[in-house]
Image (cartoon, rainbow, N blue to C red; front, side, top):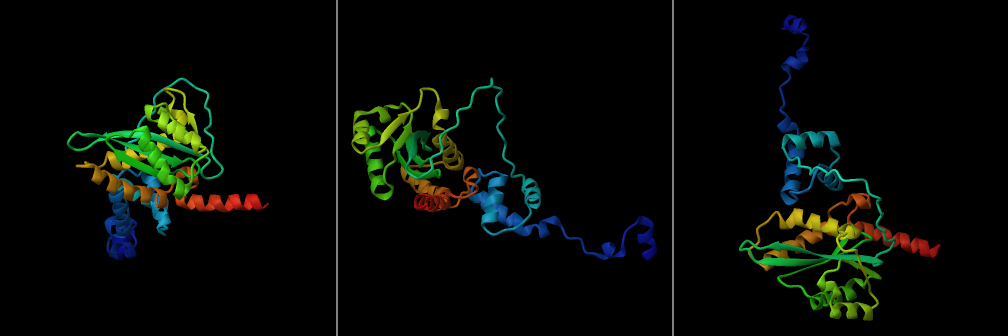
Length: 263
């Protein structure tokens, strides 16, 4: 045996070593990835990898990516359209909570075909989802009720960024906002990029929840949205927040603001 191994350039230790398949050595990685993707099917590799790190797993990113590809979990990436070069206008990033909120609507349908809408509100400071109101009809009066619920819990923003929808232009809502000191900043018609924070949230909400399930009634939508919103605010890392969650970033931002005021 020693002579045979020498002829083919193989060590005897390697010959006698019992082969271990990758599925066995990577069992823990496979289990962790499957559990994560089962709960968040629309998360890509880096989002999953950062979530694993937050759970205390110290696997190398190359190993995790190899297992990720072996399991064929790769997400299809949408190709960018070739557009003429345009001057980019950076969106203002608030330095404190409640400086600027963004609001917008999302439309979807139940399994039976009945349409419903969601009214989404987020804080631009830490991308926190403050409210998701769900119903078949959402008027300006209903918006007043949503902000009325948020006021004792979180306060009201200095500025609310919104589009030119009839709900935001209704007399009841405009009058209530003016009475309570909340200025409304309307974006230009046909320029949703001017409300990019809430547009990005809407895309995440649609991909991770609305497009992933078939809902029979509004109660199911509200329940799943409640649990998804908790994960979004407390567990989901955000690239724009330095891989922190909105809840963590809120704590850091509040401490930093207090330090700046004290100095």
